[in-house]
Image 1: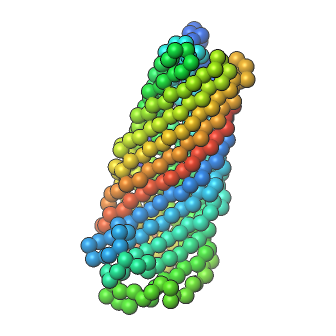
Image 2 (image 1 turned 60 degrees about the vertical axis):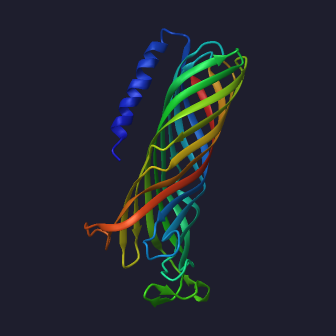
Amino acid sequence: MRIVPVFAGLVIILFCAPVVQAQVNKDYSFSLCPQFGLFYGKVEELVYPGAENKADLLSLLVWDIKPVFYYGFLMDFSPVKPLEKRGFFSNLSIKFGIPGLSGNMVDKDWLSVENAELTNFSSHDNITKKIFLFDLSAGFSFPVRGLFFVKTFVNISYMNFRFDGENGYKTYAVDLGSGKFGPIADAPKEPISGKVISYSQEWFYVTPGVSAGYGYKDLFSAEIFFMITPLVFCSDLDEHIRPPSKQFIDNMKGGVMLEPGLHLSYNVNKLLNISCDISWRYISGTKGPAYKSEPIGAGIYESAGKAGAGLSILNTVLMLKVKL
């Protein structure tokens, strides 16, 4: 997804022009804000079965994010007194996950044409290699009776996740041939060492949003927000390292993204603000064609059915705003 130039253009439009205007318009403030937080949740990779299989899924891979700490920054342009005057606002948020062990990666397969029983299971250490989130929002804020405010906005989001599965074990049911398998309970547990699999996801979506908040003078505010959209796009890359190596590329869209959240803010003085966000980002139902190349690097891809992707992430972040 080559969308960085698009984001750069939007940043110039939504931030540079308003900031210049803010120099002569004291109704607005521009803030720079370091942010520190953690993600807790999971990323999912799904493979859907053909007509000959009995189970609802052919394969399910779950990558833990339990937890991943992150750092980043926020740029915010907004009205100084949202309880008194309506106005335009925009903000840009960038988050960088800190690489490291983040739980387990679990791989389940239902390969039987005879029944819907689990046939393959493996579990590995999940090493988070990269988490990058980019969010750009813009909208309007409206005061209500001097105590409340309502916001409507549009949010553009890009996310990039990369993981490695290492070590662990596998339990594979005995292949009896003709698409039939023995009970997985009778299969031995085999230890694995080293890198087994790599997986990456890229997400892009556009969503409308709405929020409502309460403010106490110029000291404290509490705000709830909600976003939902079907305009979701995802591409992923799955590389099975162990021989025979395989590479899968999936291009998916649709489904639903929803994100509810809570924002708390306290003004220390006219220049400093401390705030905290708690939100849950959930995506499900994204589907599309899958393509397979074997071995890795062969460069020749063939159709591999239909794939899906999803995620569920709780985000908690602490921010210190410095108003310029």
